[in-house]
Amino acid sequence: MKKIVTILILFATLQQCLAQEILSPLSYSFRHHSVKSSDTTLLELPFFDDFSDYEGLPDPKRWLTQQAFVNKDYAPEPPSVGMATLDALNERGELYPHASTNLFKADTLASQPIRLDSITGVSKRKLTPSDSIVLSFFFIPGGWYGNPWELVGSTPSQQDSLFLDLYDSQANQWDVVWSTPGFSPDTVGIHSHWPWHFASVKIDSAKYFNRNFQFRFRNYASLDPNPKSGISGNCDHWSIDYIYLNHSRNRGDSLSRDVAFVEKAPSMLKYYYAMPARQFTPADMADKLNMKIVNRYNQTLASTYHYVVSNSDGGTVANYEGGYENIPAFFPNGKYQEMPVHCNPPVNFSFPVNGQPSSFVVKHIVCEGVGGDNRKGNDTITFTQNFGDYYAYDDGIPENGYGVVTSGPTGNKVWLALRYDLHSADTLTAVDLFFNRTRGGENENIQFQICVWSCHNGLPTTLIYKDSERNTPAFDGSNLFHRYILKEALRVTDTIFVGFEQLTNDYINLGFDRSNDSRRFTFYRVGNEWMQSILKGSVMLRPAFGSSALVSIEKPQAEAPKVSIFPMPSSGQVNIEIDNATPLEHIQLSLFDLHGRIILQTPYKNTLDLRHLDNGIYFLRIIDTVTGLYSTKKIAIRH
Image (cartoon, rainbow, N blue to C red; front, side, top):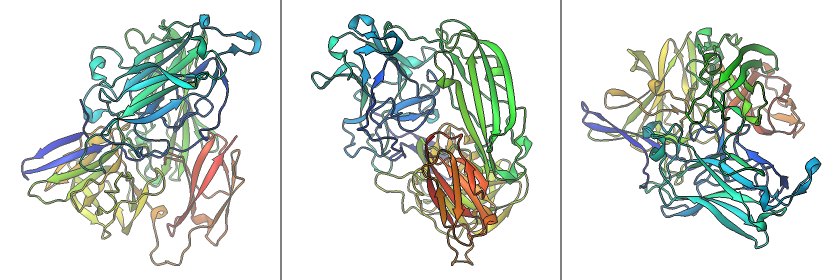
């Protein structure tokens, strides 16, 4: 059955009107190039990728094409943390130009060339079809079974197929060796412990046994028939994980001696993904964490678990040792680690923030304790806890668009408000909003005014601020929030609700993070009645506090800081020079990754030690906290 945009309808009978919370697929998602698709690397057996130790585009050391999207969120409970998702967006994160409601070719995930002619090294020998070479993988269409407003991933219809091809270099052609039509995980998930499917192909034709062997996944997609191009977008997700190619295997070989994390590392805070340094108290720490750990072997294993917390200089802030515990085999009963010291470890410390912008890296490590673990990459997950000038429920990566539209006699205005609990009086100076780009640019001229309400009985009540500026959606680069500066700074205390009044009945398409659930803090209104959201996820709206978000309109002659960054690319030690007369005590540095997430925030330093970061591209924002003006520089890390 063909999919439609998820529309959740709630009736407000007193106003005799209809309010709709709408989740839309993305029309754009930033995906950086890590290597030109013409660059090739000759690989040897074994080939394995479970997408556990990186995100973004596929690893160019293993993959030749860059159209799939490596993530940790689009389908639950993968074989191990991370997956590659094929969808309707190209490598630039844009809908394919030929995308339509008719079937069209979409993503391709093609391996680098792999030697199937021989094995080199100590055990050098020729490979033949008798060596029982098997390619296996796990896959899932869309998300999982359950309520549609709680799922990530768009379920493919029957025509939206997934294919596996093998490359015949002698004939210079790709051979289809496996395929499946689209289907809903509901058809199997409710009857089994796990909705992921195992597939395998035995490679036994002599034509593939050469040094130019390749395999590839590809999908066909079709857009939902939405009346507005601003709502049409990404669809027909196929997530793939645990891809393994090797000799001496059989087609049913789905197990591995592998103790692994299943989900990404969580925030160490009780409610927020990030929060202002000046508002943080020990009461904001989570009591315990939820860690999902799997044993992919066919018997109980012993494992250890611990986490380590480090500051931005690499010094240890806290650590936790969970010791040895047995972990049951996942198959056939779908069990994960159940011992609380591993799956629900206590948070036994408080971040030493002291009111100053700071960031901390939390590293979680699990190890198979006796016989050795076949897969080391999925044994470590990390989380960066940021304390800057803003609150955030979201992780900075949208999986959907969000908006509220109305119809009926009450007019065409809607209001959106998110709850934030302040521990001390502070000054609200700005609001960061993430707007999705749309295919037809339909949301670019929608007007809204930022609003702040007080709280009574858990609901927004008195309007205490309404900004005089009529704003429209702005798009700060790729996957970055736009900061809307308030015309007048607002002194606030206790609990407040921050949001906006939308002046038209159009779909505004805010970023919506499906992986962090803050619906109990999210409210919308038409007429006079506030209603709590039932959508699992977080609207990407972040209130910012203090002078770091201020723009001085009395000093229009002020200039953004003029900055030099060197050396570039850098192995991790980055030097920063401010060229103009900006007082250095006014400078704050914020480092973003390619997903727009802040991974470091600190007062000005002339040298940053970034050696702990992975290779890749980052963006350093240098802001004058008095004028609010800033410069952004690109940083390339190459170890």
